[in-house]
Length: 379
Image (cartoon, rainbow, N blue to C red; front, top):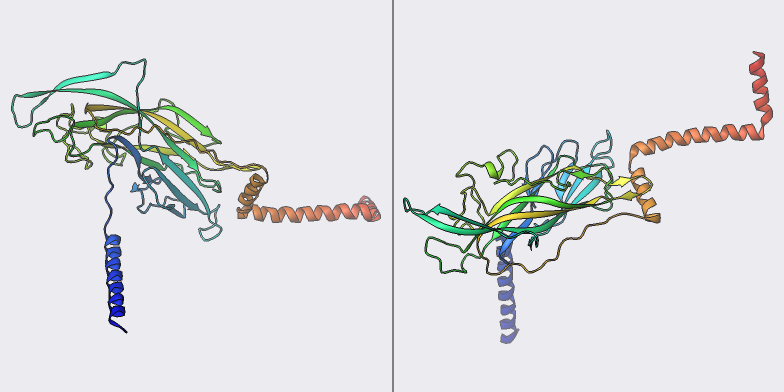
């Protein structure tokens, strides 16, 4: 082997080694989420099966009583996730013909700034104590801002209609993201950020169902007001009644909230949506329920953003169903998946065969029927 070949081979081995080291390093380190536009953001935090504890997206889910397993499908994100529930049918165990339903959750990540032309903007003016300066107060001006966004819940096409997700809770986040260096004002050293924004109130303004059937959510009512929590747990108090000095958000922790009118206000809050019933509807054919919930959000903003998201694209209602032969095929598959139906089919088949035999005898050999009747009368 010549010197040039040895050099080339050595370079290839060195390059392969560097690539291998980089791959191993990348596999052990998590990538940071790069911030985008400033402003309010919405997303899925996690899921809490009925009677279980909440789990963040991607983490293992507890399995509620009556189910075989609960798991995330694919790679869940704050904008969209799917939970798969596997359950036995009737009294049969999990190892015999287990059936599954999948619940799809979509969240509009960037709420759209909304302004009611019939309502004048609400300004807020107040004083707060200056940190470290006894008896001194800072005059603060702010405004109540309005946003609109949507949440979608749907049963995945192909689900077998035997699990309703009843009592399960989906946890969402609302958070105000602020760039941590750029500023819109020449602030003094006591102010480490140019904007503070905290969610105040969120209410459902519109609900659109497709193939609803018996399905329902606690939030699928116009006028439903969401409760904000400092952690993903309803065992605590709502954000509005938290004691002073409660949990502090880790998001944008470098930005000061000393100018908020209440120290209990947070940039990051959690709010739940509890499922009452979400399952496929199967009779002649199967249809899969889907609902889109439109939410109006009010926030308190102090200061101004440098650049907010200009996109007004919103989620579209999922409309999943079946027609024609596909519909019949889905219904037949769901029916045949039930072993009790198969057992009933066997009994029904035996009865049908017995009836056919009696009819055939009565038609082809009426003298036997006549003799049987005369014998009965003679006795």
